[in-house]
Image 1: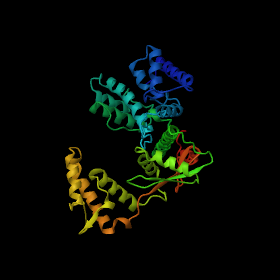
Image 2 (image 1 turned 90 degrees about the vertical axis):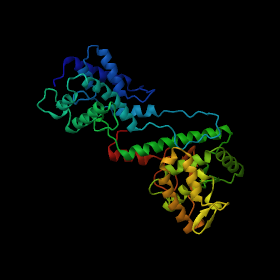
Image 3 (image 1 turned 180 degrees about the vertical axis):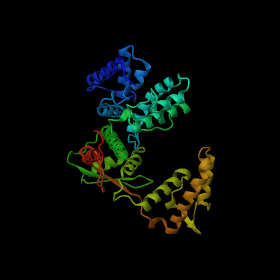
Image 4 (image 1 turned 60 degrees about the vertical axis):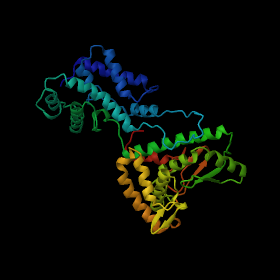
Length: 394
């Protein structure tokens, strides 16, 4: 379809606004620069038709380079300051995070909610959508899009038409033509973000108790599973060791740090052992549901039993069935952990290594040990190289 002069003026306005706002764009909710600028340009244009609005950031002729805008949206969405909540537990293994995928979905939701409203004004909405993306002979055919982009638009528009909202997304949409994404990079970005938050939380904990770690100190925190006891090494200062161990073991700080280390393990980690990890998961599950620690129980006829002589698996089953939510999947949990309990009983508890985890600390940052990838401050040159190799915009 031929672009009208009003539409062209609107597009020029979009580009000018993007240039003016490039240095100071921020987001209070997870809205993209792309959508916000499109709205602003459209309102300023005044006479922009619905048809023109639907093409903003959508056709080959109108798309500008949005890689920088998308990056700013991602950074702004995750620009969070760690504040002292007054709680004893300050460290959190999983902090609120907005991924690149979350932002892409937000952009598509804003875009296609409008397009869906326009489509539904047509006598035959589905026929109109098919004309735009499937019928080269139609005057509505979008020949300004690539074949993959037409398919994405068709999928996304029909998703909204049939379901009233998006439950699945085709991310090959033209809105992201100039932004490259990679699943591995997205995963690593989140790990880097979580590390930055945990670093801040750890510093807040140290500050609360007026503990100053010397700038040249290189410490190691080692945490045992289930009881989450912390041992600090790397210094001869016994007072400093005692202070750090004490604050990390307050509240659930050591447990949260343990979980953070576990989430940061890479595939080549020398700390990871499938056998030890399975043992930890089983012991943790049984302990959290029943209150019994396997290391304190006896094995009788190949089964773990409680001090009163009851089959531990029966106790576990009873506790699950007390919860109306867990009851629905109790049979799956019982089958899985029942097999794990039998395996541990046969192997003997102490013959399977414990899932003990360590992490280094220096210059205000936690640093991964025993693996090539570290998520500590100043340790992520490998991530920049990964982005370069995969063509991800940075």
